[in-house]
Image 1 (cartoon, rainbow, N blue to C red):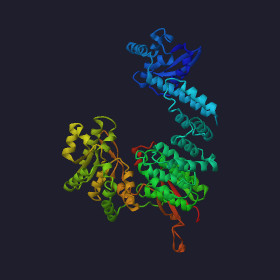
Image 2: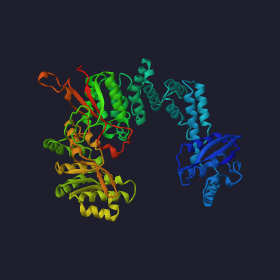
Image 3: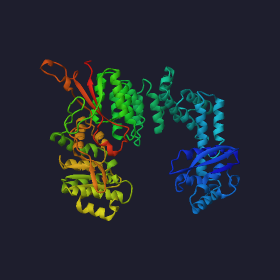
Length: 615
């Protein structure tokens, strides 16, 4: 398809459209060619008319490119070459003609892209700047009418693009100080962020400046700092010897939405660098409990890079063991590298035999998975208060709902199986019927085994198709919590009240509940109980319910004595804490997409770590 653009001033706009088109995946495409002053510009355009991309092009092409339809087209046949039928051609032509006038929404987005590209180009080509150049940049950006960058927000946007270059950020802060006489806390936090990102360039004078400005900002009275400002200030102070002041700022500015994870990362780094794990571990615990990003993995990687002795390595591995954290392959590779660099351990990639529990490298058997009745009784007594009540009941339920549930348990327990109905239904994907059908198949699977079922769900599930609701109400004991309540604590508590043989069905990892237990012994008991009693459904396909196989060992770091150096009568007096130790560390292969279907499957990738010498 070929057409000509008369108005050369709109060339940059059309290039923007070309970039959008080329970066969008469609089912199929045709090559289109535009001539600007007889210079060809080629791009691909998809043919799926109902896609958002085509609606965008159909509605806004003429306006964005030229501003008037008669400047570009002589007739409507220009688009007809790639449309498959007359109705489609007519529809497309009508859309083009009817939307040739200004359309603010899309135009604003494209003009904003032009503005931000201007900033990016400036930042890429500058290491520092002066007052006149900054004024000229702002003037150029604001001259693009219709964009989202205006005089009231442009300074923050420019700063955000500058933070990767410390001297350029300092230059713009100096410009703002000359222009407006006062730097806001938000602007200063961006400078702090730049100090953190470029900390290798920071001088002693820079660090003194950070401490001075940090103290000035946080000690102001009647000032509430935004979460983003707090995050920037914390990152800056973390590179100084006053890094612990960042902990105080975080504790005084709680942001429940982020649970203080991202802002805490620089402080965790500082704690590790200063060998103060007592400060670092509580925040790392939160990352493991609540993190849905790669933040915890980044912290683990940073920790590994700063391990240089066996004592620190033991401390690291013991933490992984206590929290059953499974590293990614990049972190495992980094661990191997550190062990070799400092001659700490001989590391070999290994597999564990699922039945014998033995390592295929050293033949060491991993610890058998078991839970003592005394451990279970302690967990059962403490779980409700620590994970649900504990002053936090209003965030997860209501006192009235909790009392109703406890009364319900007294009259209906025990059960063989406790189900998280909504969680199970999500295996069916999205759809009004697919989710209920999936749950009904799982219910029937356990009914066929003669199990007595307690199903926990949400009130809105009562609006599901009648056959599914009828199955729940006639074949199971059921309890529906409010739509805003959390049902996991109820499910776990009901399972514990049923005794050591009662199991629960859920896809949840339950890390947040583990975090709330606080006590190390209770955490270990919970982890063992969870692996023994949690039924994990991997898939429901054509009525076939596939359940994860039960393992005889825990999927966590294991510590033991290497059989090759196991003490004999001739080795009396050998300190087993310093000789003959071996570690087996599971890791996940990141070449396999981490989804629920493989997160619970047995880890086939392990590190077998044997001490190279007594140090």
